[in-house]
Each structure stands twice: as structure tokens, then as C-alpha cells.
Image (cartoon, rainbow, N blue to C red; front, side):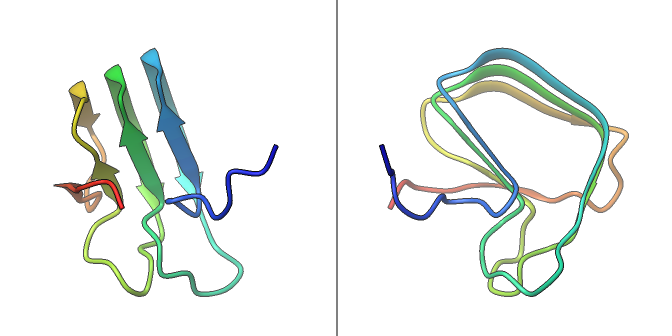
Length: 87
């Protein structure tokens, strides 16, 4: 099954509950216009000590779509989150 181009170049967290990403670094070999992480329809997602290279066409690293609750960024300086709409 192919869902097409993912909304994030790194992690696309969808329909998840209780996810913690701890001490993770996301890096790119080449430019990408998408954010590093997109969270959709999920609850209790914690990003702790996460760093990421910012996509070239966005001003944020973590996109949070409607239907999410409890998305928390801790000890991740420079990691920027934005509420975004689904395409």
C-alpha cells in the first residue's frame, strides 16, 4: 500500500497514543521542504531532547494537526512547533 508522499521528511506520527522520543537527532543529506515531524490524530506525544534540521520551505520543525492532545516538547532548544491544517 502506498500512501504517497509523507507530510514530514522524518517522522510522521499518526493515530498514536503515549509516544516518547528521547535524545534523538534528525538530519538530512539534502534539502527538503517538509517539516521534520508531523503529528496527526495522536495523544500524549513527548519529544524530549530532540534536534532536527529545518526543512527549506517551512518555518517550523514539528507540525501538529487538529485532533491532537498532549503534544509536549521538552529540553529541545530550537525545535519549533506549529499548529497546521491537514492538506
